[in-house]
Length: 74
Image (cartoon, rainbow, N blue to C red):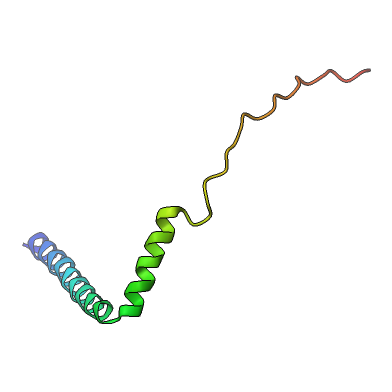
């Protein structure tokens, strides 16, 4: 019986957190939809991200081969 109550408490806690997250998500989406400047900034950021923020990635060639170690002279 104790295990059942423990599992039920965990489920209620997880569902409760999900409900709070969903409400917060809906409130933020409603706020963002009313702000045209913010939506424009998001669109500009998406365009910038699609192009790559810092340009194309650097091209790395094959590293130079190192010479094998030499034995020190005695």
